Each structure stands twice: as C-alpha cells, then as structure tokens.
Image 1: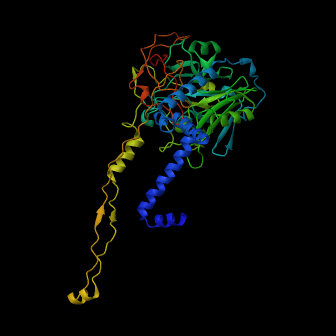
Image 2: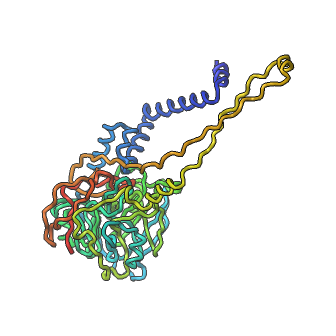
Length: 487
C-alpha cells in the first residue's frame, strides 16, 4: 500500500509534488499551532512580540482580534499595577568615597539569544538628560555626545513615530533637564510614567505627577516603562514579562547609588533580542533595587568615548531622538536649551521627509531593476518516423524558444505601522515597551514654574499614526495636549 502511494507520488510532475508538500506541511504546522497546547503557547508568544512593535494590529494573525485586544489590556493593566508603589528614597546610601576617575565602566554581556552592553555609572549626579540642538528634528546620540563633550550616553524617552520614519522631535510624556520642565503632554496633577533622577542622584521610576516630581527634587527625567524592580522586589515573578523578544534599553540603581544602563541588540542575526525578565534578572544579579525600561526597539543604543558601541536595528543606523541620558565629567557646566519653547504645533515627520528613506526611494527610481529574460521550457515536436523523414529528406527541428521579460516593479511605498489605540486604564505616558496608542485632547491649562507646566504645542498629526516603538509598545494615552514650560 505504502509503496503504491509512493510510486503514485513519483508519477506527479515536480510542480504538483511541490504544491502537495507545501499543503501537507501547512496542514501539519497549522494543526500543531492551533490544536496543541505547545502550539498555543508559541502563537501567544509571537503575538506578544508583535504587540510590542509598531505593527500591533497584525497580532490577530496568531491569536485573533479579540484575544489580541485582551492581551494588550492585560499588559497595560500589569504595567499600571507595577508602577503604583512609591519608592523608598532612603534605600539608596551613596558611596561618596569613590574617585572621580572611575566614572564609567562598560562590559559586554550576552545570553542565549542576545548580545549587548552594560554600563556602570558610579556617580549618578553625573547623569543629565539632553535634548536636540535645533527645533524640528531629533538628534542622534553620537551627535549629542560629540556636541556636549559627554563621556557616554543611551537613548531616553519615547516619541511619536509615524511609519517608523519619524523625525524624533515629537516626544511622548515628559522631559526634564536641570530642574526645568522642557516638555510635557500632561497637566501637573496627572500621573505619568517617569524614569528620572533627583538632584542627589536617586533613580525614580514609576507613575508620578509633575507636581510630585518637583517636590521630590527630580531634576532630569523622561517618560517610559515598564518598571521591573521596585524597592528591591522583582515585579516579574512568573513568565517572561509578556512582551516577547526585542531590542531593549533599561536602567537600574544599586543601594550604593551606582547606576547601571543595559542596552540589548535585537532583530538581527547576531542578536534576536531579550525578554523583560532576562533584563530584570541581569539587574538582580547586580543587586539592583530599582529598575525600569527606556525606549527600546530601533531606538536602543549606547555610545561610549564618541563611539556607537551597540548595533541599532534600524536599517538606517542611528535614529534621531528627542532625549538621551548622557554622562558628564562636569554635569554642572551643561546647559540644555528648551527647543520646544514657543512652538504652536509639532510635526512628528514621516516617510515624506525622512532623509535616508527619500534617498533610498530616489536611488530605486534612478536605478530600476534590470530586465531579466526568463526562458520558457523548450518543447520539441515528436520526430517523424524514419519512413516519413526519408520521404521529406529532413526531420523537423525543435520548436523555437520564447523569452519572456519581467517588468521592473514600481518603488515600494514605506511599510506603514498601524497602531490601534487600545483602552488604557489610566492616563500615563510612555513608549517602547507596551501600552496603547496616544491621543491628544484640549490644551492643558498653564502652570507655574513650581507646579503645572504652561500651555504649548500640539502635535500636528495624531500620535496614533505610529509611535515608537520599534519593539516596544506605545505609552498610555495622554488626555491633554503637549505643553512646554518656558525657560
């Protein structure tokens, strides 16, 4: 029986055999993915990974639209729960006897599926938030480091990122530097996800209002999440954190005040990316007592001694960003200009003005794919019998071969990244690890320099059109328009 089936299969043409093999493999893999517990686990894992990118809507392919929306809500709820606990500021006892020469140390780190860098900063007071030098465009971290004379730096908070081709100038959440509120899209009384440092150097992570940050003495901060260690307690106690593998940037602090920045490469052959729990475990191994994530995905990078020492996943290399944490020998001499001051609207950019993308499209247009001849299979006529051949004196030659051509395909449009806003239990901000799309409401009322920020620009396009990130989910939806505090 088996041999007859095999013989029957062998009698098929190569094309028919190929289609049959594909059909059988598709049936078996689909049966495994949709009818077995291990298959369900794989589908949910893939869905979580997709949810934390700019292509969240596509997660329905693995689990369906209803389950996708449920997973998004579960991730948001967990993020909100983990952000509530306030930090014990007395837990950090700074080591003031360390020499200034041992400012920074960088190490290589790796896991089964990833490679990255870990940077120790022994005096947290040397860390400052730096923003772009000019209005209308974000700035690459290598440029920030060179311009300011910094020793090292990593990427900071999230931003509105249409099509994954944004200009890096439309932040999400809050940005503080040197005690000044440079940008915020919330009123001073609305909690938002914060990663920042007090004047004394204590790392603050969680949901805080601008008013609370000012009372705590926070001087430098950006918005991002999730939090993974709070007051010495790991917050991911089961599973891998629920966001799949992706490029990651994270920050933590030890009880002696030492700050640790971790950057993991991802979405590349040499490094797929890390899970949230893997990063949490790296911090726990260093006795970190508070830790959380910064923007991830294609924005993740680390610069040291004027050199980019990690490998960003963006096909265009370093991205333009709205904020970064930089380390300085003399942080008190650093002056950060408020480049959002006086703006009425903020254009987040996109495919229409992204320099590398436009150059790429122009090159494709100028150098279309070469036409390639694809010969059709040669067919021969049945030769005449010997008697017929002798009668005519010749035999029929094989038929001629036709050469088809392939038309060059038009330049592809940039891949869009649909970001469907999901219901958010609270109104925090953040981006790069989970959350929903962002939206803007009416302009927020003005605020004094000591509490609520003053009214400012509204993004000219809806943040729902794609926000960073790249391997990380968007921040919860703000309820008011972005505001900037004048210098």
